[in-house]
Image (cartoon, rainbow, N blue to C red; front, side, top):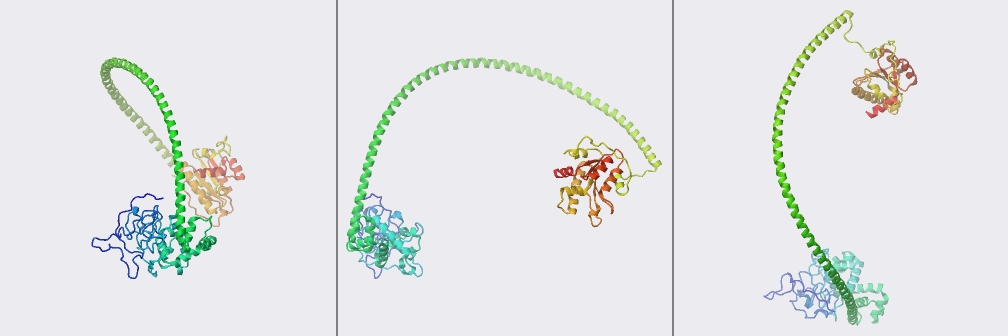
Amino acid sequence: MTAQHAPGPPPTPGSDTPHPDGTPPPGDTATPPGNAPDAPGADTPRGGGADTPRGVGAAAQGGVGADTPGEQGADTPRGGGADTPREQGAGTPGGGGSGTPGGGGVGVPREEGAGTPGEGDGGVSPSSATPLAGDAPPEPVPSSAINPAPLPDPVRVKVLELAAETLGRLPGTEVPAPLRRVARFEPRRRARLGAPQIAAHLEADPEFREKVAELVRSRWPDLAAGVAAGAAPPAADPVLVAAAAYLLRPGDWAAEAERVRAELERTAAAEESAAAQRTASRLRHELASLKEDARGETERLRGELKTARGEIADLRRRLHEARQRTKEVESRAEAAATEAGRLREAAAHAQSTADTEARRLRGRLAAAEAQLEDAKRATREGRSLADARLRMLLDVLSDAAAGLRRELSLPATIDRPGDVAVGTAVPASGAAGLLAGVPDDDPGLLDRLLQVPRLHMIVDGYNVTKTGYPTLPLADQRRRLLGGLGGIAARTGVEITCVFDGAEVEAPLSLPAPRGVRVAFSSPGETADEVIVRMVRAEPPGRPVAVVTSDREIITEVRRAGARPVPSAALLRRLERA
C-alpha cells in the first residue's frame, strides 16, 4: 500500500540543483578522482533519478537505504544530496540515507532521526561529518553493489539495529574508520543517530557486513543455516528472515526480500481491511444510536416547548400584576415624598429653635465657668494662708528638735542595729508575731514578708546555695546568690544581710556586694549560725526580721528571738522567678 504524504521541504543551500551556467552548486562535491559516477556524494541534478512511483522504490535498486513507502521519501542529509519532492520518491546517488546505486547504505525514516547536522544529540551525516584526528577518510563505495529491490521499512530498521549492536561489540581497532564517531554514541541511540553512516558502510564494506552476519549466526543459528540453504524455517519472523538474507547474501536473497515485502503488504492490507470493517460496524452502531438519541431529543424538546408556552402565559399574567403593584407603589411614593417635605420643614424649625437654646446655654456656661474660676482663686488664697501657718509650725518644731539634739550631744548619723551586730552583740528582746497565721510552706510567704515596711531579711548564705546550686564551686555559689539578692533589694528596698561561714574560705575575702545587700563572714572560731542569731537579737523590739534558712537549730533560736524563719526553697523559687 502507498501512504499519502505532503511534498518535501523546499530546496536548501547545497542541494544538487544545477546553476544556470551548468556548474554544480556551492557546497556539493563533484565526482572525486578515482570514484565512479555513482559513488556516495556524487551530484545528480533534480530529477536525475528515475521517476519511480513511491512504493516501487527509487532510481537506485537494492540497498537497505532505498526510498520506500511510508514516511521515507528522499532521506537526504542537510546540505547535500537530491532535492526531489517526496511524491516522486527519487533517490539521490550518494545521499547519506537515500537509495543510491552501488552505495546507498541503510537509510532510516526521517522520524527516526537521519543524523543531520544540528538535529538530535549531535548526529552527523556522511557528507558533513569531519573525521576526528587519526580517523581515515570514508572509503569510496564500489558501483558493483547494486541490488534488485529496496528493503521494506521493518527489515531496514532490523538491519540497522543489528549493525549498531555489532558496532558496539567490536574492539576499537576493528571499528571501520568512517564509523568510529558513530561507535562512540550510546547504544540506545547509535542506530538512530548513526543510521546514514552505518547504512552506507554496510553496502560499501562486505567485511563489516560479514561481521554483522556473524551476530545473526551466533544468535539464531538455525535461522541463519536455513536462510543460507535457501529454506528458512516456516515459523520464523519474516522480517528477521529478510534481514538475515540481506546480511548473509545467499543467491536468492533479493527474492526473499521481495517475498517478505509482499507478505508484509498483504498483512498490512488485511489489517487495514479488518480495521475498515470494524470502523464501518462501529459507525453503523453509532449512527443507529444517534438516530435513537435524536428521536428522544425531539420528544424532549416538544415537551419543553409545551412547558415553556405555559410558563410564558404565567409570566405574562405575573407581569400584569407587577405593573399594577408598581402603580400602587408609585402613588405611595408620591405621598411619602409630600410627607418628607413637611417633615423637613418641621426639622428646620426645630433646628433653629435648638440653635437659639444652645446659644443661651453657652452664655450660662461661660458665666458658670467665670464663677468657678473665682471660687478656685479664693480657695488658693485661703490654702496659701494655711500653708504659711503650717510651715511656721514645722520650723518651730525643727528648731526645737535641733536644740534638743545639741543639748543631748547626739551624733549626726547613727549605725543601724545590723551594722552594730556584726561586730558587737547587743542583747535585745525580739518582736514576735510577724505573719504568725501564715505557714512556713506557703508559696506566697516571702512575697508578703518583702512588702512589710522596714523589714530586715537575714540570709544563711551557704544553706541556700548548697540547697539550690550544690554542683557549683563556692565562689560561683556566692556570686550567683548575691546577684539575685541585689535584684530583690533593688525592687523592694528591703534591708538584706547575707551571712557566710568564714571557715569555708582559706583567706579573708573582699567580696563586692550588690547595692542594698550587706555581706558578712563569720570570724575564726565562730559559725555563721551564731552571727545570724546575734544579728537578730541586736534588732530593736518591734522591728520585723525574717531569717532565710532551713537549719532547724537556727530556726529554733531566731523564732525564740522574735524573727520569722523562711525556708531556703522559698527564696530559691523567688530568685528563679525573678
